[in-house]
Image 1 (cartoon, rainbow, N blue to C red):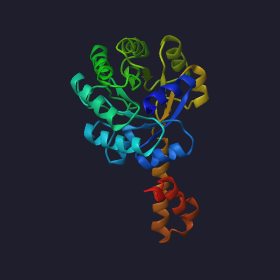
Image 2: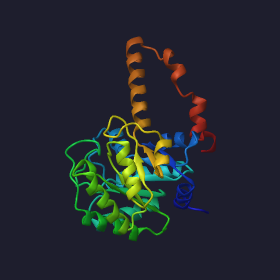
Image 3: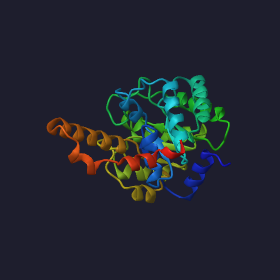
Image 4: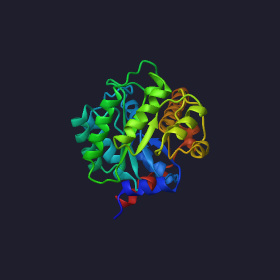
Length: 277
Protein backbone atom coordinates (compact mmCIF):
# COMPACT_ATOMS: atom_id res chain seq x y z
CA UNK A 1 0.00 0.00 0.00
CA UNK A 2 1.29 3.44 -0.94
CA UNK A 3 2.39 5.51 2.06
CA UNK A 4 0.88 8.89 2.85
CA UNK A 5 4.34 10.41 2.47
CA UNK A 6 4.50 9.07 -1.08
CA UNK A 7 0.99 10.37 -1.73
CA UNK A 8 1.99 13.83 -0.52
CA UNK A 9 5.01 13.84 -2.84
CA UNK A 10 2.73 12.93 -5.72
CA UNK A 11 0.32 15.75 -4.86
CA UNK A 12 3.19 18.24 -4.78
CA UNK A 13 4.31 17.16 -8.24
CA UNK A 14 0.81 17.76 -9.60
CA UNK A 15 0.58 21.36 -8.43
CA UNK A 16 -0.08 23.61 -5.45
CA UNK A 17 -1.42 21.82 -2.36
CA UNK A 18 -3.72 23.96 -0.22
CA UNK A 19 -3.38 22.70 3.34
CA UNK A 20 -5.65 23.95 6.14
CA UNK A 21 -4.49 23.66 9.73
CA UNK A 22 -6.10 21.24 12.16
CA UNK A 23 -5.83 21.00 15.93
CA UNK A 24 -7.49 17.65 16.64
CA UNK A 25 -8.74 14.58 14.79
CA UNK A 26 -12.25 15.94 14.26
CA UNK A 27 -11.00 19.12 12.58
CA UNK A 28 -8.74 17.03 10.34
CA UNK A 29 -11.72 14.87 9.39
CA UNK A 30 -13.61 18.01 8.37
CA UNK A 31 -10.66 19.11 6.24
CA UNK A 32 -10.76 15.76 4.46
CA UNK A 33 -14.56 15.85 4.12
CA UNK A 34 -14.38 19.27 2.45
CA UNK A 35 -12.09 17.91 -0.25
CA UNK A 36 -8.63 19.13 0.72
CA UNK A 37 -5.75 16.86 -0.25
CA UNK A 38 -3.68 17.33 2.91
CA UNK A 39 -3.86 18.73 6.44
CA UNK A 40 -1.35 20.62 8.57
CA UNK A 41 -1.06 20.08 12.31
CA UNK A 42 -0.50 23.58 13.61
CA UNK A 43 1.79 23.87 16.60
CA UNK A 44 -0.05 27.05 17.55
CA UNK A 45 -3.38 25.26 17.23
CA UNK A 46 -2.28 22.40 19.49
CA UNK A 47 -0.77 24.77 22.06
CA UNK A 48 -3.66 27.22 22.05
CA UNK A 49 -6.26 24.45 22.30
CA UNK A 50 -4.39 23.30 25.43
CA UNK A 51 -4.70 26.83 26.82
CA UNK A 52 -1.03 27.60 26.19
CA UNK A 53 0.85 30.17 24.08
CA UNK A 54 2.77 29.04 21.01
CA UNK A 55 6.15 28.99 22.74
CA UNK A 56 7.07 25.31 22.57
CA UNK A 57 5.59 24.35 25.94
CA UNK A 58 4.12 21.03 24.79
CA UNK A 59 6.51 18.09 25.02
CA UNK A 60 7.53 15.93 22.09
CA UNK A 61 5.47 13.00 23.39
CA UNK A 62 2.38 15.20 23.83
CA UNK A 63 2.59 16.54 20.28
CA UNK A 64 3.42 13.13 18.81
CA UNK A 65 0.44 11.51 20.50
CA UNK A 66 -1.94 14.09 19.08
CA UNK A 67 -0.27 13.89 15.67
CA UNK A 68 -0.77 10.13 15.67
CA UNK A 69 -4.43 10.45 16.58
CA UNK A 70 -4.94 12.94 13.76
CA UNK A 71 -3.02 10.90 11.17
CA UNK A 72 -4.98 7.75 12.00
CA UNK A 73 -8.33 9.55 11.69
CA UNK A 74 -7.94 10.56 8.03
CA UNK A 75 -6.85 9.08 4.73
CA UNK A 76 -5.16 12.26 3.50
CA UNK A 77 -1.50 13.00 4.30
CA UNK A 78 -0.80 15.13 7.36
CA UNK A 79 2.19 17.41 8.02
CA UNK A 80 3.25 18.00 11.64
CA UNK A 81 4.77 21.20 12.99
CA UNK A 82 7.57 20.15 15.37
CA UNK A 83 8.67 23.71 16.17
CA UNK A 84 12.43 23.70 16.90
CA UNK A 85 12.68 19.90 16.94
CA UNK A 86 12.62 19.51 20.74
CA UNK A 87 16.39 19.95 21.09
CA UNK A 88 19.61 19.51 19.13
CA UNK A 89 20.43 17.05 16.34
CA UNK A 90 20.22 13.99 18.61
CA UNK A 91 16.75 14.98 19.80
CA UNK A 92 15.69 15.81 16.25
CA UNK A 93 16.67 12.30 15.12
CA UNK A 94 14.53 10.78 17.85
CA UNK A 95 11.66 13.15 17.09
CA UNK A 96 11.60 12.29 13.39
CA UNK A 97 11.57 8.57 14.14
CA UNK A 98 8.66 8.99 16.55
CA UNK A 99 6.65 11.20 14.21
CA UNK A 100 7.24 9.01 11.17
CA UNK A 101 6.04 6.02 13.19
CA UNK A 102 2.95 8.01 14.25
CA UNK A 103 1.76 8.07 10.64
CA UNK A 104 2.32 11.66 9.58
CA UNK A 105 3.63 12.27 6.06
CA UNK A 106 6.23 14.84 7.02
CA UNK A 107 7.45 17.36 9.56
CA UNK A 108 8.27 21.05 9.59
CA UNK A 109 11.18 22.29 11.69
CA UNK A 110 12.20 25.91 12.26
CA UNK A 111 15.41 27.79 13.00
CA UNK A 112 14.19 29.77 16.00
CA UNK A 113 16.02 29.59 19.29
CA UNK A 114 14.12 27.90 22.12
CA UNK A 115 11.90 29.11 23.73
CA UNK A 116 10.33 30.00 20.41
CA UNK A 117 7.63 32.57 19.68
CA UNK A 118 4.84 32.86 17.16
CA UNK A 119 6.55 33.56 13.84
CA UNK A 120 4.62 36.79 13.33
CA UNK A 121 5.57 38.38 16.67
CA UNK A 122 8.55 40.55 17.50
CA UNK A 123 11.27 39.35 19.84
CA UNK A 124 12.22 36.16 18.02
CA UNK A 125 15.77 34.84 17.91
CA UNK A 126 17.28 32.40 15.44
CA UNK A 127 20.06 29.86 15.86
CA UNK A 128 22.96 29.94 13.43
CA UNK A 129 22.39 28.58 9.94
CA UNK A 130 25.05 25.95 10.65
CA UNK A 131 23.17 24.72 13.73
CA UNK A 132 19.95 24.48 11.75
CA UNK A 133 21.68 22.65 8.91
CA UNK A 134 22.84 20.04 11.42
CA UNK A 135 19.25 19.57 12.58
CA UNK A 136 18.06 19.16 8.99
CA UNK A 137 20.76 16.61 8.27
CA UNK A 138 19.75 14.74 11.42
CA UNK A 139 16.09 14.79 10.39
CA UNK A 140 16.80 13.54 6.88
CA UNK A 141 19.12 10.82 8.17
CA UNK A 142 16.57 9.56 10.69
CA UNK A 143 13.66 8.94 8.33
CA UNK A 144 13.12 5.38 7.14
CA UNK A 145 10.96 6.29 4.15
CA UNK A 146 12.82 8.69 1.87
CA UNK A 147 9.47 10.14 0.79
CA UNK A 148 8.87 11.40 4.36
CA UNK A 149 8.91 15.17 3.91
CA UNK A 150 11.35 17.41 5.80
CA UNK A 151 10.28 21.05 5.61
CA UNK A 152 12.76 23.67 6.82
CA UNK A 153 11.34 26.95 8.05
CA UNK A 154 13.46 30.06 8.45
CA UNK A 155 12.36 32.93 10.67
CA UNK A 156 15.31 35.08 9.66
CA UNK A 157 13.22 37.61 7.72
CA UNK A 158 11.73 38.90 10.98
CA UNK A 159 15.01 38.80 12.89
CA UNK A 160 17.72 39.97 10.48
CA UNK A 161 16.63 40.52 6.87
CA UNK A 162 15.41 38.78 3.74
CA UNK A 163 18.95 38.37 2.37
CA UNK A 164 19.84 36.30 5.43
CA UNK A 165 16.65 34.28 4.98
CA UNK A 166 17.62 33.55 1.37
CA UNK A 167 21.16 32.53 2.32
CA UNK A 168 19.77 30.22 4.98
CA UNK A 169 17.35 28.69 2.50
CA UNK A 170 20.26 27.73 0.24
CA UNK A 171 22.13 26.15 3.16
CA UNK A 172 19.04 24.24 4.25
CA UNK A 173 18.56 22.85 0.75
CA UNK A 174 22.19 21.70 0.74
CA UNK A 175 21.56 20.03 4.12
CA UNK A 176 18.76 17.98 2.56
CA UNK A 177 15.52 19.90 3.16
CA UNK A 178 12.76 18.91 0.74
CA UNK A 179 10.76 22.13 1.08
CA UNK A 180 11.72 25.63 2.22
CA UNK A 181 9.29 27.66 4.32
CA UNK A 182 10.14 31.40 4.58
CA UNK A 183 8.13 32.62 7.56
CA UNK A 184 6.54 36.06 7.94
CA UNK A 185 7.44 37.60 4.60
CA UNK A 186 5.95 41.06 4.39
CA UNK A 187 4.85 41.53 0.78
CA UNK A 188 4.05 39.84 -2.51
CA UNK A 189 7.36 41.12 -3.83
CA UNK A 190 9.23 39.28 -1.09
CA UNK A 191 7.39 36.05 -1.86
CA UNK A 192 8.15 36.50 -5.56
CA UNK A 193 11.82 37.12 -4.82
CA UNK A 194 12.04 33.93 -2.78
CA UNK A 195 10.43 31.99 -5.61
CA UNK A 196 12.88 33.46 -8.13
CA UNK A 197 16.02 32.86 -6.11
CA UNK A 198 15.33 29.56 -4.34
CA UNK A 199 15.47 26.47 -6.53
CA UNK A 200 13.36 24.18 -4.36
CA UNK A 201 9.71 23.55 -3.51
CA UNK A 202 8.39 26.37 -1.33
CA UNK A 203 5.77 26.59 1.39
CA UNK A 204 3.81 29.75 2.24
CA UNK A 205 2.00 30.54 5.48
CA UNK A 206 -1.24 32.46 4.93
CA UNK A 207 -2.09 33.18 8.54
CA UNK A 208 -4.39 35.91 9.81
CA UNK A 209 -3.53 39.14 11.65
CA UNK A 210 0.18 38.73 10.96
CA UNK A 211 3.02 40.24 8.94
CA UNK A 212 1.94 38.71 5.63
CA UNK A 213 -0.69 40.48 3.49
CA UNK A 214 -3.69 38.42 2.40
CA UNK A 215 -2.74 36.50 -0.72
CA UNK A 216 -4.94 33.86 -2.36
CA UNK A 217 -3.89 30.27 -2.88
CA UNK A 218 -4.03 30.83 -6.64
CA UNK A 219 -1.72 33.83 -6.39
CA UNK A 220 0.75 31.79 -4.35
CA UNK A 221 0.54 28.99 -6.88
CA UNK A 222 1.16 31.40 -9.74
CA UNK A 223 4.27 32.63 -7.90
CA UNK A 224 5.55 29.06 -7.72
CA UNK A 225 4.67 27.95 -4.18
CA UNK A 226 3.95 24.24 -3.75
CA UNK A 227 2.38 24.15 -0.27
CA UNK A 228 0.03 26.81 1.08
CA UNK A 229 -0.92 26.46 4.73
CA UNK A 230 -3.79 28.21 6.49
CA UNK A 231 -2.66 27.07 9.95
CA UNK A 232 -5.06 28.86 12.30
CA UNK A 233 -8.05 29.77 10.12
CA UNK A 234 -10.27 26.90 11.27
CA UNK A 235 -9.22 27.30 14.91
CA UNK A 236 -9.93 31.03 14.99
CA UNK A 237 -13.32 30.68 13.30
CA UNK A 238 -14.26 27.84 15.65
CA UNK A 239 -13.22 29.80 18.75
CA UNK A 240 -15.26 32.85 17.70
CA UNK A 241 -18.28 30.67 16.90
CA UNK A 242 -18.05 29.04 20.34
CA UNK A 243 -17.75 32.42 22.03
CA UNK A 244 -20.81 33.73 20.18
CA UNK A 245 -22.79 30.62 21.09
CA UNK A 246 -21.85 30.89 24.76
CA UNK A 247 -22.79 34.57 24.89
CA UNK A 248 -26.21 33.80 23.42
CA UNK A 249 -26.72 30.84 25.75
CA UNK A 250 -25.79 33.00 28.75
CA UNK A 251 -28.14 35.79 27.68
CA UNK A 252 -31.14 33.69 26.63
CA UNK A 253 -30.83 30.52 28.65
CA UNK A 254 -31.63 28.37 25.61
CA UNK A 255 -29.81 27.07 22.54
CA UNK A 256 -32.87 27.18 20.26
CA UNK A 257 -31.58 30.20 18.35
CA UNK A 258 -28.33 28.37 17.64
CA UNK A 259 -29.73 25.19 16.11
CA UNK A 260 -29.35 26.30 12.49
CA UNK A 261 -25.72 27.21 13.15
CA UNK A 262 -24.91 23.76 14.54
CA UNK A 263 -23.56 20.63 12.95
CA UNK A 264 -26.45 18.20 13.44
CA UNK A 265 -26.16 14.94 15.33
CA UNK A 266 -26.49 13.08 12.02
CA UNK A 267 -23.75 15.15 10.39
CA UNK A 268 -21.42 14.62 13.33
CA UNK A 269 -22.00 10.87 13.43
CA UNK A 270 -21.38 10.62 9.70
CA UNK A 271 -18.15 12.59 10.05
CA UNK A 272 -16.75 10.40 12.82
CA UNK A 273 -18.09 7.22 11.16
CA UNK A 274 -20.14 6.33 14.23
CA UNK A 275 -21.70 3.22 12.67
CA UNK A 276 -18.29 1.81 11.77
CA UNK A 277 -16.97 1.91 15.34
